[in-house]
Length: 317
Image 1 (cartoon, helix red, strand yellow):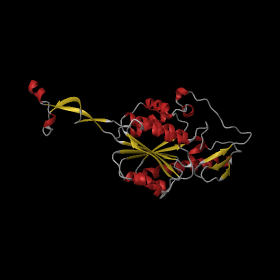
Image 2 (spheres, helix red, strand yellow):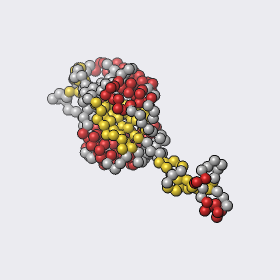
Image 3 (cartoon, rainbow, N blue to C red):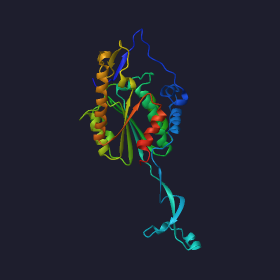
Image 4 (cartoon, helix red, strand yellow):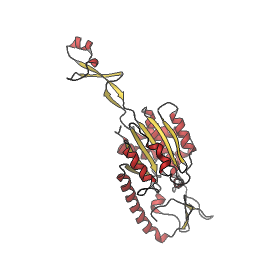
């Protein structure tokens, strides 16, 4: 067994562990308990301390920014003739122009995202927080944002937009979303492959459905072939990597319903196989031309977002 999309079945004598989560640490459980995704998104974005990409560059535009000396070949229409008459020197008026792009947020909404961590936070709940924060950051920079939930019955989408109503639409879609069934077949994902302009595509998934020639692998390859940056956020819980459940725990597969009695003696072999699977999975993602970033649900979402922006998204666009 190389992965656990399993959820323990608690017995009468077993209670799920609880923990205290200081709000000042922006813990996922505390943020989820606010039941206000708009507020959470703003808190996470402000804590991230960086934007998705430098959203402005120097060039010809509508709003004046500064002067620079004339160089042969420059457009004479931008020359400031009044300044030239006063100073006998030639300067061009420069302005800031937007370099907007589209941030496409994709979420693997298969049933394995219902897996809870030690604190009871599911991958789906954590993904909601993270995607809301990313959307807020992009919207604050006037970039268009789109959201697509990859469900067993097809796509559930919020089309790309930069208007003032986009964030409420996206928050509502995230809040109403449930994780069900298995990963969709590739034909159901075709709308994601349509031609697009400058974009960053971010996929959040536990990647249990990633294998050579699988629908997920083909999707990543075709997304990358279509141009733009493709970033895969591999979402995991610590109890998956450690398998640190009590000996009496019964696991069941959230997508197939298969049940398995946990044997503590198998833990070292399982952990070794899981580490090997992680290496293979990261290699597969890179082989598709996408970037790979591993996240754990016990990491404060603001910290995860900050790390993500600094390592991959900051400076793109």
